[in-house]
Length: 333
Ligand SMILES: Nc1ncnc2c1ncn2[C@@H]1O[C@H](COP(=O)(O)OP(=O)(O)O)[C@@H](O)[C@H]1O
Ligand SMILES: [Mg+2]
Image (cartoon, rainbow, N blue to C red; front, side, top):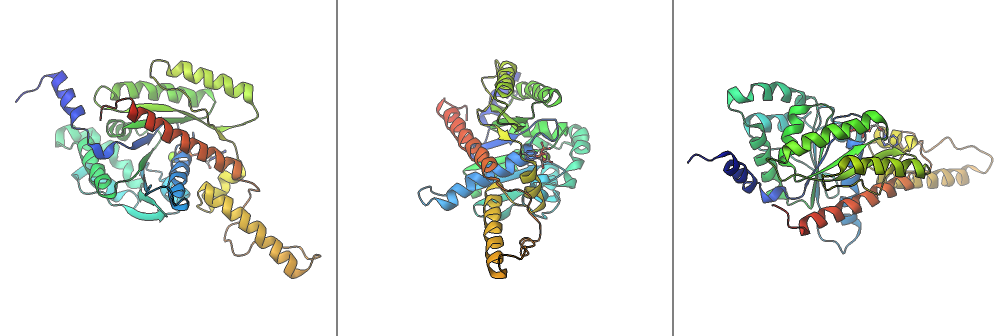
């Protein structure tokens, strides 16, 4: 049977796998805007909520690291992984995706890394070689989701890797866009908005909002202005900026990556480091100076990472609220 263009598009939409209904792509072609940090931190917050509160049933979270830099895999989670090999094999040959289970309680990972840098070359020849990157990824991820049944899937993406980004925009159900408040990052939002509108013609993807990253929470007038600008930029997309912003905290940012901790874990680590310092002072007498916690292999620079961790927690809640609202509004899936 030969389908007309409109029918074809309809068939594609109908074929969208229900297993992918909770996939959220975190994207902005601009680098350094918090994509990986937000992916890892929000995933950790949602999985952690499941772990600590008995009331919530299983809330497993899956992180898909679709970035050749692999910051979420290597730096944030401290996982070696397979450098993106399995991911790449899935894109190329439609082989099953490998999952690294339980990188944290309730948290699974599809590892990223330098092998993913080959995607550009792959898609350049895909039309001739008959490789369908979108179908391969969609089927591979749907199979993983059908098996693990995650409550939430967060997909981290790299800067500027246009072919992979376009594939991700075709398979993800939702999109969030992090940005800093400088002009270059904001124009990254604008570029992505255009890509998003194009992807929407063939995919059910829905923009949930923009997240301001690395902001001074005390600059309230400035932040309100940026939010207003963003909302104007998003006008017509149906989305608005998230009211929760991720505050600047360079000391915490250093610690998170050097020690491969998620924000909630850093809060605990600094608390424990404080307790250990006290205990050592008591043991050694008041006049001796403690030399820092020697059972941590990295020195922690942050004093109080709790406000940053709270930002991520608020963002996680807001994200789940927006997903729930979109699902209620008669989603196309
Ligand atoms: N709260 C924060 N304040 C300031 N800098 C941060 C904060 N969180 C992370 N960073 C730093 O910002 C940089 C970019 O973050 P990253 O999440 O890697 O962005 P992207 O994935 O978009 O490239 C990293 O060097 C990271 O350590
Ligand atoms: Mg990144």
